[in-house]
Each structure stands twice: as structure tokens, then as C-alpha cells.
Image 1 (cartoon, rainbow, N blue to C red):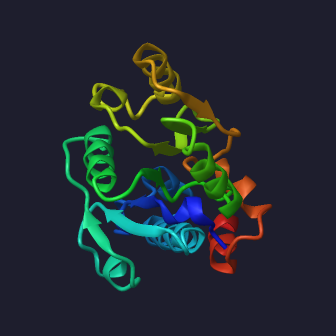
Image 2 (cartoon, one colour):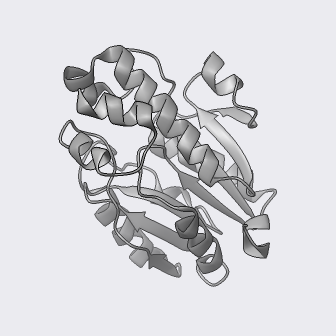
Length: 208
């Protein structure tokens, strides 16, 4: 069970609405639009399962009925790009909690142990990052959320983690990197997904 550090931490799950043709678009050539959207649903459910015991909110791209059916406080993302949306959400959460962790839904190897470690690291660090193999990051935890960490970053590139680290080094904030993970973004990632004990529906989608 999450400990005292988790009780002090807001956990925000950022998710794209599972709309066929708009969710997991890079997987559509392999899976088809409907199967890609169903995979997005399963990823979202899994991320929320990891978050049990935390002060959790689901931050979605739209008021989709799937989001509203999950029994988790829902917040509509606000901002022109991903950076603005995360910054807005983090600042809002930090008004009510000493620390905040933001995760997405695309990392099937993220664990509850990872979340617990991030929460503990935030007792002595201002920012915690979990780098991803594609150059982004799968988790960011913060006690402070300066706008400079999010503004002007090319979120579609493979330089997100490196650019964020450069800004952290300039900021003087105390930060820590966690282990490197991978996410499911491209058709070739589906082969790795098959090797995991994921939901049977996800494995069926990955075999297509």
C-alpha cells in the first residue's frame, strides 16, 4: 500500500480520449482505428490501477463517456500544448498538495514501486524524471513547477528529456532521474507489449 509520502502526493494521469481515429494514431496502420482506441482504454485503466491509494485525478483531452465512467475525479486538460497543460495541472495540484506526480498511460512497464520511489524522492528533490527510450519521459514529479520546464519544448521530438534536463541544470533545482523505461507509441513497440503479462485484450490487439 502507498505510504505516508504517497498521501502527500497528488497523482495526475494524463490520457487521450479513446476516440477511434484519434487515439494511438501511429498504431492505426497495424491495429486499425477501433482496436487502437480499445488499447488506449486498457492503458488508461492500467495507469489508474497503479494510482490506487494516491490523491488521483484523471486529466483527459475531452469529456469522453469512458473517462466519466471510471469513478475517478476528472479534469479537462487546459492549455495550447502538452507543456502548457501539464504546467497548469501541476500548479493547480501544488496548491493543495506538497508534491505532484504526472504520468501518461503509454508506459506498460511503469509500476507501483516506481510511483512509490518517485514520491519518496520528492521528499528531498524538487523534480524527479523517469526518462523514456524515445527521448521523452514517462513520469515527472515536482515540488515546484516553474513554467520554464514546460514552455517552448518540442513535445513531438526525441529531445524532450534532454531539453528538460538542460533547463533543470540552469534552474538550480535539485532533481533526480529514475530508471529508463519504454512506451508503446510505434507499431514495433507492440512486439514488446506481447511479452508482458498485460490484459488479454491488449495482447490480442498486439498480435494483429
